[in-house]
Image (tube, rainbow, N blue to C red):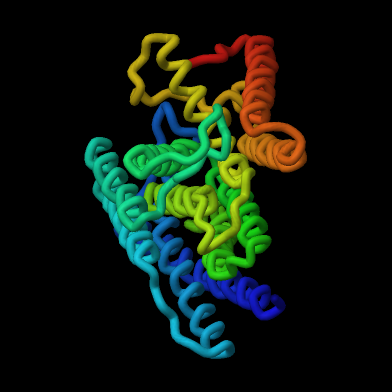
Length: 366
């Protein structure tokens, strides 16, 4: 086990260094070519900020992964082999990553991005990697491929867009992703599926490097950057892949785990709940489902009087609170009941938040 922990640490450090080296180069490139995220009424920032930080995410992760796996195989014998789902996952990642870069540089119509997301999502179930069991949630256990396949595609596209939409203030998407990735390292390490731990360590490393520039970089010194769609979409796809991989019941990889679906869901709960709540609010107020607004959780916290960093810490704290609660309840009550408790907590949280916003003379919904 010690060698695997060292490989995870090495993957993290290598990716971290890649991010520290690459991000300043990206910042200089954005300045030379005038590639900025323009402020508008819906966005929080008021100055021009480069938005190509996510370009270094996938290359840094893959470089760290391949080097770590090469070292692992050299020390343990054998050769690196790629399964079908590994190849399809890489292809899907490259598609999502590519459309994100194009959108960051020249812009892409939402319909086009959505179609690419669906195509990328289809690769996983086509490689026989799909959600095949709900473990008794709502009384449903095993599900056939013809149901699991479209359900998996829906889940992947939903998670990808949830991570994209939560990227509204400094550090939020990266912070929630780091928490989720750390959780996935923990649960995969318990099952001794170390290649996934090494992969996740790599993406965490570059996210830590990015977070430094995103949170503490000075815009006037050209050292502040956003991840853009190339980052948020890629993170979402990787998280969706890990979600499906851990939630799938595959005795050839991991033993049966009745809590696998709930564990995976808990790690991405905040972005998922936020998207669902915003969608319901739009329906209630008869607004277009894809109409941009400022009703996400970070917008509401700032209307309640918080700064960006205070809102960030509040949301990250809420994510950690859910993880502690759900992991503690996992072996005590059914997953359906845990979800009911999670929803109740989220509703109470927003009722309190709405009251705080109203007390300041602001509108809870915009």
